[in-house]
Length: 380
Image 1 (spheres, rainbow, N blue to C red):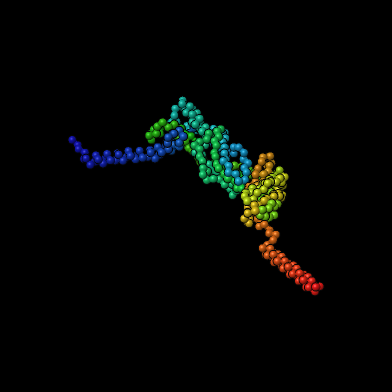
Image 2 (image 1 turned 90 degrees about the vertical axis):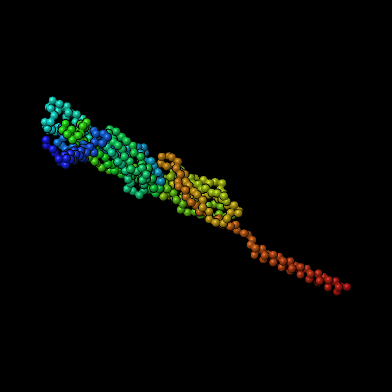
């Protein structure tokens, strides 16, 4: 009886275990990581020796973007911008490849080839879409919160909505602008039919190996900033007086490129100031034109002497006939003390003069009386 040493048996078993572990490792590295949850939509890293390629499709996603709603914005507006993205991809054709691998019986090869061609039609579906809105002008700011958005997939003929928040600067020039929407996505570039030889790698229930490409393109989003009037106070004339009503003239200028139709100027005063007529009609104000509104303002008699700042605004009709209000403008109104007709010094001088006149008259009367008394004594 031949006895094999225990040491050699152990070495043989260890060698087999290591060999089996290496085979499992190779399978897991080359095949299993690519399977994922949905084997039919993930890339299978199989060598071409385990697949057959019957058809090549000619097509890819075509991503388009546009704004839903009115693309015309106003200065100073914070807008929730809705962007519609659509996939208009199409397949221009298929090419039959000369597989002729002789790994599948001729009787069923055509059926398998046609099934692969059907799988090739997914080449127009965009997957893992990532989109970020960008602005290249300082007059439009894209809020960073929620700026990055993604979609799992978008089939051809379908649309999806993305939402971004933007803010238009209050001094932005009117006109046309473009926002940029860089979009990155993957799409299926090829499908290969998995052969029965893949079973040797431990891969089962997988019919196709799919190859994907990544594409990045920048879409342009056109928007417009509406032309509208803008006003500023260019001159204020007139002073207020304690306890009196005075006329104050305020001159407004339209500094923008659009007519303000049927404009009204208004001031907003608070105690100790008041006015009976706070609104004055100015009519149409052309671009660059100035118009003056006269307001009668009364100050309380005990109002503190200082410069008062009151708010003013202009109401007008825009080109669409809608009522608009300008930004609030500050108007400085100086208040002076009431003029005193008689000063204390003047009153004192007047009193001195009166007293002096009284003394003169009194002395003159005494002299007259003395003269009459002397004349009477001489007659006796």
